Length: 412
Image (tube, rainbow, N blue to C red; front, side, top):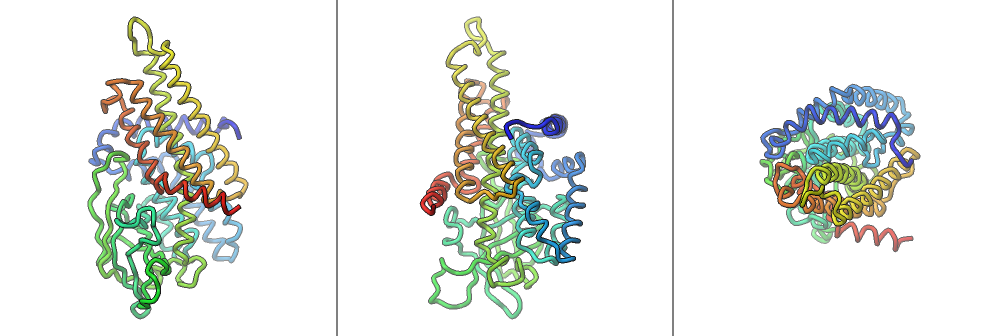
């Protein structure tokens, strides 16, 4: 794959039409947090029939699983961080990211991480219980692993814990930087199993994943944080104070490895999330590129369009190089996902590291090209620069990506 198909381009134009009508007029309210993104996402789903397609696909998948034929769905259900819809999913994510990165982050976490984890790790009963509302975006999902003292050391530094209480579990702890956390209806929460054995180092304890619903006794969803960027995505804290969890909320409904292995589940999600960063980066690069070309052709100095100045041409050329490189990474991921070739965590980390760095550099150069105007919110490159920087931290800081890439190389 080296270019978008005619069908892809038609879909892209339709998405752009929706964005121009339904999102751009509301960007300021989205940026201040006055307008949560969820109703806009639901309107997007309804406009393009994404809710009905998701509902039908889930119905068929569950029917096959009930009949004992779930293996045939395994390949199709691995979205690889591409939104679960191949090239069209990438196009939608990229186009949204260029206008409101937070909006697509909220969408991606709810569908890709929350629903995706239940789909890959849950029992049939758990899928039937929680997926219908999540895949159609009738309900908002959150994926809660990060804690105040365990950012990049997600498993070792995790302090949230569960203890058995008869057939149930009691959950205590705190999560932070949780996308959709303030408003989520369904939450995938990770916690260490405390079996009362002080001889087992807390860092080495088993990690379990549970499904929580908003309103459960002892669960508190904090107010949205004020952030530097990605402001259209509500991010907040979660507090667990003796939350009682019945066994049917334990993903896989068993503690004995396999689907219940919280660490394995999270690592799968890490890879998907990091691949997805490449499509978001591409969207920001595309939008910066477009805005800069238009501005260079219209802005004049000393009686000339600034597009005629060699330093401006250099900036535009380097933006184009970044666009081509990141787009090729995305094309590669689309092809491999379609072929059922799973991208490794090390490769996903490499994609995330390069693409987020490229998007941030392009966005900062866009601000510089616009000069004083670039520092003004009115011209939007200011927002794109703030949003792009978040991609170097989001889904694991770029520094930790280096470790994953090196481990992958040294294991060969």
